[in-house]
Image 1 (cartoon, rainbow, N blue to C red):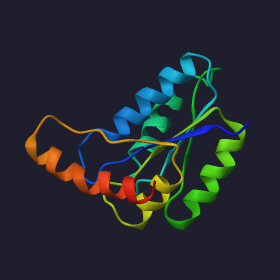
Image 2: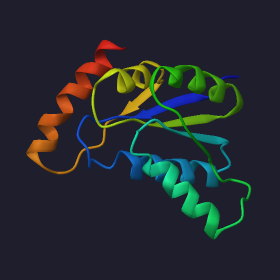
Image 3: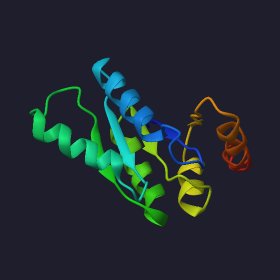
Image 4: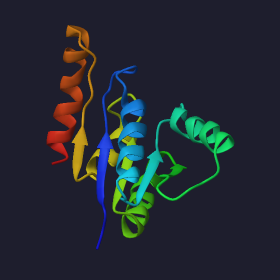
Length: 135
């Protein structure tokens, strides 16, 4: 069985993509799901979080596996992870360029977080259009 791929995408920075990816991955892991998280954002905040978390606590069952990759290699890595995990959570970069497009294309579900402001709502349209185009 192949795991489900959930991509967190939004062209606007600061919308909470990384925070949402972390919280979903940890919650699903705590529920017994085997979860991988893929950090495709060049800022690599999710990878940094994993480094701090690993330094503070020993690895234990139910901890999501975190890896990072960017660009054209992301779809192959997503496919590889989906073969070994129940869920693959992808943290995407804050734009709708190639990197975001390929991880949206690989997703079974795209989650588009927004902050409660009209500017964030306006910025969401490009991501929604991209998700629709990539089906």
